[in-house]
Structures are given as structure tokens and as C-alpha cells.
Image (cartoon, rainbow, N blue to C red):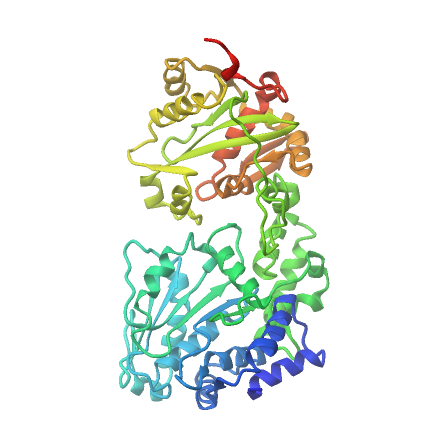
Length: 556
């Protein structure tokens, strides 16, 4: 059994009931005791651990037990090779949990002569320059205010360099198209909920491994975009915590509420933010009062609950009143299993060949997204087959926060060039689909009527126009809610469509009528869902259950 005082201290605090831990941290302790701490081929580098803690506490701030606990595993090594056991660290907790401050201290120590690795450089990467600079500027300010550290480090506004080790610290934005990995010893990925996919990570960690003890740090709070890079990391974390991958080099330290209703018990908040464990520091006490004020404000303005739960409690929670459906029901459009289940079972999509369908499109914003689709009805279940077109120029300008390129690889969308999405893309898709399925009617709203009408009618399609799209939302809303709740909608294995649906903001007007708008105008698109609604509006006029076209039986 390998031990370290900081590891023992933290586990002991939990065992004696002095701190409250969420399920993921309890799983972490169980996993460590079962698969890691009983190994004979590993050891804690006590010298490095103690030096690191003393360095941070001398120049930055006193470390709390959970921070010392994590630090110990930063220096867990193989006896034979001296390689690190953990290369990747996932640290997630509620906003204000001290993630950036901790990274500041760790980064500066790893640059130092005490660490003793020449050229151990560090890049801090975030979605925005302001966020990327957070830890960098903290290190800068600490050095600038201390003459002893000034002798050891050279400062510029872009780099902090240790004079003896030549290790530098820099900040960078997460734009994979213009960045290359350097010869880093560690890369810190901040705001990981903002990452569209793993492309940025792959590029930025490309320089790791050229110096000893490479490390990757992933830090942040949960976000609103599902099925992106963060969800992939969380899936890997679940595998580790369940003991399914005991030799993984990922150390997952995740702090969050276990259940939504725990938010009403203020003593449970330390599950999401370990700063709130007793005894609290002055910083933690002030933060706790701020968070408490935000919580009390929810009784007056409940619209802020989704933000509060996601960012303060690290517990994403749909606002059911303003969402089309809970995430579990949206997930059920493609899977038989719960979204948190480790082993997922895809929902079977009925055979649609020769079935009658109704077409639909959303072509309102020709400069960014357009969506097309076919709606089928089989045994009372609505099956939606869809495709989208996205303009490259729009993607170049706007950070979507969604894995657009991955979805293109899966065939769910097509990225097109040009100043607008040409109508020919729409027409060609419907023509191709008509060769496979039985449909001739396409439903659309009156936006871009001049572009859409002639192009589709020239190909022999019949167009049904919705004069006032928002007016049909209130008519369809109860039906849509029922269909999702009864699992009578199938999108198939289509993360793009789930993303569209999750982006819809349901607004209830004073007269009680509902409208389907966007949670964010630029980055959270709803085009595929709007096309689905168009089709659903006309579906029962056109579609008949179990009605098939047995074309092969017709004698032409």
C-alpha cells in the first residue's frame, strides 16, 4: 500500500464525516484504494509534492486539503521508469472553486528551478484571450510584487520565463487553425465546456512528450452544449471511476451536486464547490454569501436557475418551462437507454423504404444554416430523417461550441462555400430523397419564398406554405410535449438533431400561447427543429399509419 499524508488526510476527512463529497469523488476514492494505492510499482515523489505545496503556500496562497490531495497525484510515478502515472487531470467544480488560482501556483512551480526540469514550458489555452490570461496574469502579478521572484523570472506581457530552467509560461486562445503545439511540458485547457471537439486539444498537445513528465490539465465548469468535447471527457471519467479502465492516465476530480433538490440545502453546496467545506477561508466565506444572494434572487427571478445550477452547482439542469423536453426525452429519440448509462443501446429505426412522407425545410437564414427533412409516421411514431447545410464563412466568424466538422464526417450536414447557401443544395437533396421515398409535398414558411418556390416547383414538388410560423407553435406545443414524453419521436443516432432541439427556447406569452425561439441567436441553432415543426403541422393531413407504396408490385 502506497500512501502520502495529503492523500490520507483528505480521505480521512471524508471517512470521519468532516467534509461532504459527491458521488464522483466518493467513486474516485474507492477507485484509488482498489486499483492504484495498492500497487507496488508506483510511488509518490514526496520531495516534489512537499516542495510544490510549500512553494505555492509561500508565494501564492494556503492550499486546502482537496488541492493538496490533487497535488499528490501530480507526482505519482512508476518506480522503474520514473514516468508519471497520471498524465491527464480533469478538474471540474462550481464557479469560484479556485481552479484558476490553483493552476497559477502549479504552473509557476513547474517552471521553477525546484522542479528541476529544463525547458518545462506551459501553455494555458482558453476560448477567449481574457480567460486564457487569468492564471497567467496572476503569476505575473505575484512575481512583479516580489523582488526574490523577480530575480528568478523574466517578465513580458506575453511570456514569463524562468532564467535558469528556460521554462516559459504563455496563454493562447483555442483556435486550432492557427496554432501549433510547442515543446511544452504541460498544457492547460481552460473553459473546456466551450470546446467544439478534440481538434484544439490534438493540436495543442502535439508538443508534449519532448520533455520529461508531460501533463495535460482540463479545467472548467459544466456548460450547455451536449455531446461535444466535454461530454466525451466526462464519459472517459465515468469509465475510470467505475473501475472499467483502472490503468487510465486520467485523474478525474469532479465536484457537483448529486441531485437537483440538494440546491435547497445550503450545507450540500460543498459537493459542488470544495471551497465551502468547513472551516471556510475568508475568500470562501465571501464567495458563499455571493452565491447565497444569487440563490435567493431565484425566488424573485426564476429565469436564472439554469445558469445558477450549471455554473454554481456544476449540475446542468434544463429549465423545463423553457425547454421543448427534458434531455432524457430528447436522448430517447435515438437511444433505448438513459443518457448517463455506460452501455448505450440505439433505438431501432423502422424500415422507411417506400413509405409515404412529408418534406419540410427551414431556409430563413441563408447566410448560416439551412435544414431539410422528411417526416414519416409508423405505428403512431414519427420518424424524422434530416440533413443540414452550413456556410463555411459563418463558421469562420462564429464559435459554435458544437462539433460541426465531426457531424459532417457522420454525414449529418454539409459545409458549403459561397456568400449564401445556394438553393440548389436544397433542391438536390429533395430530388435524391424522392428516388427512395414516397413524397411530393414540401412544407416551408414564407421566408425566401421567391427563392424556394420556383426552384422546387420546377422539379415537380408541391409546396405548402405556412404564413405565420409562430402561430402554429402554440397549436403544436401540447402535442410536441406529449410526443416526446411518450417517446413517439425518432431522430435516430443524430446528435445534430438533438442539439437543435436542446437549443430551442420555449417562450410562454401573456395569453398562454407558446413560441419556439433560440436560447442564443448566433451559437445555438434550431433550424432542424423548426423544419421538423413545419412537417409535423401538415403530417396528419398527408400521412397515414402503415400506408406503404408497394411499387414493386405495380405493373408498369
